[in-house]
Amino acid sequence: MGERSTGTLMVSLIVVIAAAIGIYAYYSWSTAQAKGMALDMSMHYPGLVDRNATFNASWQQFYKPRHCNRSDSIYERCLRYFIKRYPQANRDFTALRQFFDAVGTCTESRMCDFDTASDLFGDDVSSFYENMYPMLDESDALVKFARKIEDRGSEATTQTNEPGSSGSPVYTTPDQAGGRRDERGQPSLYQRVSRWWGGSGDRRRD
Image 1 (cartoon, one colour):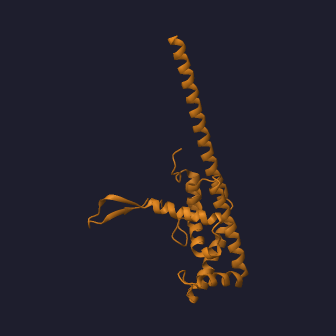
Image 2: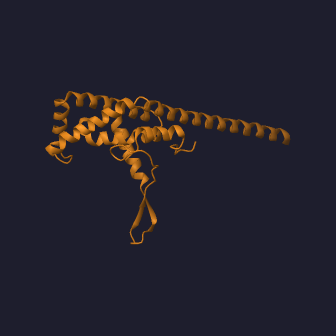
Image 3: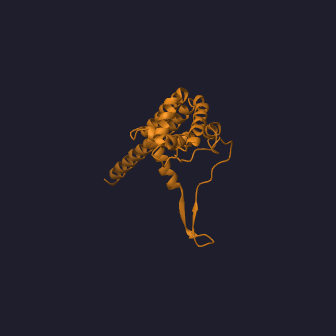
């Protein structure tokens, strides 16, 4: 009787272990696939990198002489006039909005890994959102993506329990890997993609 109970227990343990291994394998595969999807999307982005830089430069040249500050009510009118007045700016805005919205949709559906997509596109998405927010809809996936990036950035800044030499709290943020920088001082797309293909950008432990 005791041997039968022991045998039943062993079978149950084997079933539980096999199920756990299966779940872990599925999760690992799913995470790898999600990271791969984000990397695949980055392969479609190089053609938009120059357009993004040109669009940003054109907007900077337009709004600075006109003092279109984000805090002013005139800011939205400046944006609408800029996009309506310059056909190329309108085309660039539409192309970038559609691509960033696709990235946001991919992360929202969890087909794309959020951390990977954030590392690859986060700087550009955040900049686009900050500059163009009056032209975007609250329901846009890129808006949700940009705000989630901001939330994660706020969480990444941590307050230590030990005060600094002046007695005030010490705030620390994760170090960023060095590399080539774009016009905003951020890692270039080449650098970001290279980090991920080389494995150095993998912050998650599956």
